Image 1 (cartoon, protein in one colour):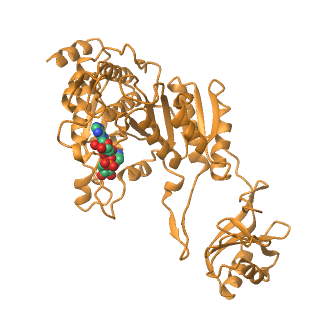
Image 2 (image 1 turned 30 degrees about the horizontal axis):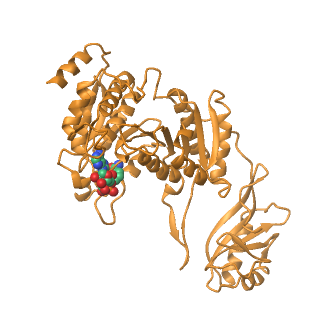
Image 3 (image 1 turned 90 degrees about the horizontal axis):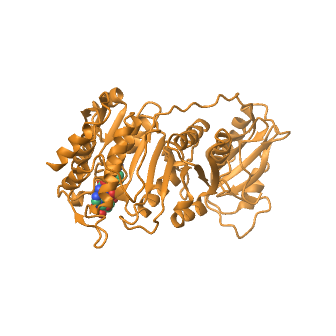
Length: 496
Ligand code: NAD
């Protein structure tokens, strides 16, 4: 009763929004309980939503749909363009595709935004001061899922990064920082090793960053950056990074705030957005009214800002902060000494509703009055680059481990001006003048370059491949070597 009265009192003074259509799924495991709690809280706070419910997850997978989402659900998503999603259970065994990866890719959700905040002294953490937002690129990098076994011994996963994809995520990070009143954007990359892929990420960060003089900018190599984040998270504000580093480090960042169960996550695209908790369906505690709904609730807060109901988002999050501060906790963050009450999912939701309209006294209240989460990213037009073929890397499956023998045989194969310049094994130069100590696998790269740099045509490459094949070698793939606007579009070998 108290909750309803408090909610009613609170609703009397707030802006009435026009209902916004959203698509919602209850998910599996603890999903239905935490979704119900979340919806009750945000609706009591005045969220104006027109909710369409769809079926996703275990039941759909087990009905023979390998994507885990009912085909009719896409119609709803196309209509509403906003998805509030509870966690799902991915059935064990092969053949089931990750619903999250499918949704991100199909709907073009290129930015994954995960705010990671510590709530000291109310939630136990080693890092009392932490308020970091990880902006992770969500579609590219090693997650393209293009993998091949090329020889008995060697498998490959392609790390694909595009200029538009990189520019989009970096612009998103800067626009996000501006829209949410943040001060600094940090970039993590490994461009000391991956000079072309991560090198492009860092370069575009510098280029785009120059357009935001009001924001502080810095770059860290991801390994030492990750160590610094785990040790001194207060040194960071917004951090933007490629997909794989972002996947790993956003979990680390969420965990060191005190609990992975407290973080929400937004997946943003040009026309669509999906909001969720970062944790899974926790099947072991499902149906017991025990789960903490906070992660999904904070995902819903991100959604409210995104759909222009920032005042509602603010009211929800401030009431939730006050609840934490009052020591009213679910079992996962309950601690003798700091906590005062240990509540179930439903009762915790009631406690938040009862505090709607209140602000925390010790924790920092949120203010979304100036935030607009729905900014548009426009990419810069670029002139087309001039691309010239200057050679080819031919990859061979060859079982003998003798680099000199291979080099002596292949140096005689020449087509026009195209001739062998070196051989590498796992990226290390082994011919000419290799080290006898270098271990070689059955996967060889033979670099052929054109004299005077320019090949006359691709026909030379085709003829070269014919000659190599005739000589009895097993060609597993090729990579063309280009110069783009006069710059090498390929790296040198290790040891070259
Ligand atoms: P999990 O996140 O479900 O659980 C990890 C641990 O955290 C468990 O001990 C669990 O009890 C606890 N926990 C998680 N959320 C909690 C909450 N809200 N309140 C209290 N405790 C909570 O991870 P898992 O056990 O590795 O995965 C379970 C299932 O969830 C798997 O089928 C997995 O594929 C799926 N999953 C789904 C998503 C998603 O839908 N976005 C994400 C991750 C995992």
